Image 1: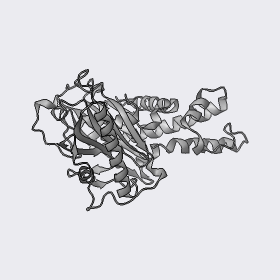
Image 2 (image 1 turned 180 degrees about the horizontal axis):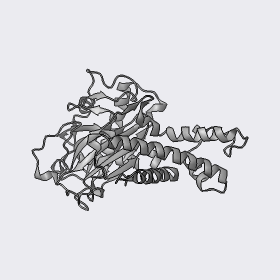
Image 3 (image 1 turned 120 degrees about the vertical axis):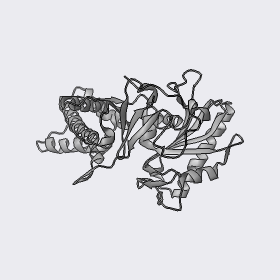
Image 4 (image 1 turned 180 degrees about the vertical axis):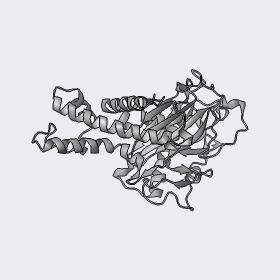
Length: 356
């Protein structure tokens, strides 16, 4: 039986800082777990490019007999739609190739999760939610289900499920769970940002707290996305573009009289220090050293946007896998201890315990 929901309003004195372990509804037992083997970080064996690598290996193997159902098309040029179409289409050879890659990927994911669950912080995990863009495909859903079966076959009492929201939305909606509910009281919306190694998203999260106090009905009302990997900006250039995106969204929310809270919730890769700086893990972010002692992301955003609707801006930052996981809190009340993995450039991870 779950330990129950917590209303952060009952503890307004709870300290609020970046990268916090104690959040209103959960304790963050672990995040950004960096386990290695002889080849490097084990999470890299189940990231978004690993499935393509497995599929490419199978294509090379069958290609030796002279028959590759995908012809001359490079594996990296196959979209998720192409792969799903081949999986369900009439060409059995193509479907068999996809299924073989799915099985390889699922075995690696299960192996990694078993390694995580041998860690003290991940012990007794009852459910693992899987996020990231890979789950938004039939192949991804099958890989998740297959990995879940493999774990159970090994005697682990844990299930894997795709996250409830679209991953793009989860990385924004989760920001609403970074702070006590009293900070958002009286406001219909808040600003959220999800910074990644390829894209940055900024959005207005409509809280819909009148429909559900636990924020289970929260939704992204409007968002902007910038694929910064195509532009290769400097660090300062990226901050400037992000600030412009946020200002555009604030203006749009004001026009609709949403009265956004003077809060910017930020999801960012890496280990986040209490002062809002990035300790490590920001190496995939563009244009400079995001871990520099002279750079602080929280300060940079607040300096650029000091006020929202005549109120002092409050910036709160946490790890991107943590934030994506937090979006699942309303749907995790039937378990005590649960985790999240996000299949992206790496394998983001976080582990939570619900609070009474």
